[in-house]
Image 1 (cartoon, rainbow, N blue to C red):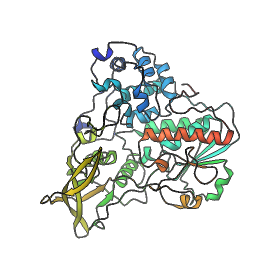
Image 2 (tube, helix red, strand yellow):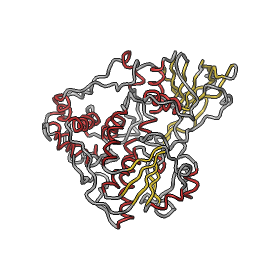
Image 3 (cartoon, rainbow, N blue to C red):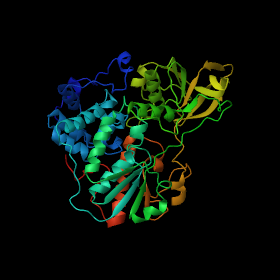
Image 4 (cartoon, rainbow, N blue to C red):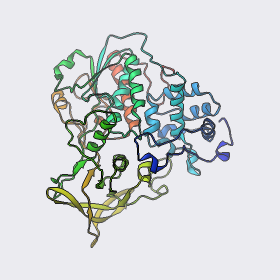
Amino acid sequence: MGKPTGFIEFPREVPQKRPAEERIKDYREITKRFPEAKVRQQAARCMDCGVPFCSAGCPLGNLIPDFNDLVYHGRWKEAADRLFATNNFPEFTGRLCPALCEEACVLGITNPAVTIGQIELRIVEEAFKRGWVKPQPPKERTGKAVAVIGSGPAGLSCAQQLNRAGHIVTVFERAERAGGLLRYGIPDFKLDKHALDRRLAILSEEGIEFRTGIEVGSDLPVKDLKRFDAVVVCIGSTVPRDLPLPGRELDGIRFAMELLVQQNEVIAGKPAASWIKPVSAAGRNVIIIGGGDTGADCVGTANRQGAKSVTLFELLPKPPLDRPVHQPWPYWPMRLRTGSSHEEGVQREWSVLTKEFAGKDGRVSALRTVNVEFKLVEGAWTEMTEIPASEREWPANLVLLALGFAGPDPGNLRRELGIELDTRGNVKTGANYATNVPDIFAAGDAHMGQSLVVWAISEGRECARAVDIHLMGGTFLPTKGEGDLPKV
């Protein structure tokens, strides 16, 4: 512990955000730069606990007390070494992860937790700024070739780890550009695509081949994969959950990702994806059904597009501000979280069940809803019942369905490979990430269902380790929480 009294002397602080009325006029990232002295003060709050629950709460097992102490002492390069030892892409997690580690922080039992996410982001950005992040191709090649299908966070981390092991790695991506969810699903105000392109350039220089605009199973026959010694399926969970209610056929009821993908393409100066019918929130009364991260991203995007009003529906009751008693520390608590998009303007409605879409001249014009209540049984909401006389009609001429995802795309790839699915519709694997088909593995959302970017990176790393063992009979690649070989 660099400063034993740091957690007493310094209150929790986070970087300031640009004013909401300013930031909704553009798609640039919203936070201002935190002065270095402030970052080091925040790192001083870490108590270097004997049992670092923060590391246990992180799916990557990041060495959090180590890099906090190094930041406090101004030893940025060593801090970067510690961070990159367990996390391939802290520039993504530092921006996008909800900081599971902070909810597991021991200090958080009695005080506001250490600002681990912001410290992580500052470390990686300092490393890039000071020129420490450079391509590190392997010194030797094994001669084994691996195909990674999908270039989201799971595919990218898996590819980098396999490349570090010396294998010849080719990443196939059906979209025009690599990045998967990071490029097409995350708004620029949360992840500037410069950070993604910067990382992709390094991966290419390390020897990973990216083949974009190629859909395996369609543009590339599955039989052509036989030239690879192993194949890793990282195609994500991309089938959106629908809401099959009366009036669903009306125009103006769209999946959330259609809005997000199209806006990201516009910002990139690209034509809208051919499979997306044009959609815009400009001048419309927008209702978003689904209160998760995707719903919040739609709120921020709709406001930037000039929506007349934005309303967000959530089926479950409003969470408490404080940690619920049935979710004690260090578990992740379901409490009310107000993100930057919510701050920019939205009416949040809880315990709302949509019953019907109403329309005029073939286009949605209103939603009919009823309020509901649940019973909390052993920490889970059960027995939903409708509240009498709570029916209501809401004006809406654009409805966005942000209800999550039902599983990976059931396209030619999955069918022709012959891989089995589990009861939830995800790719079924054993403990070693292997599918029922020899030499074919799966990781990320395609394997575990929709989740967080940090979990996708963790899955990619662990799967790469399993593939390396499969190909070589052993591995030097680390498992969760172990230090990796390359240094910045």
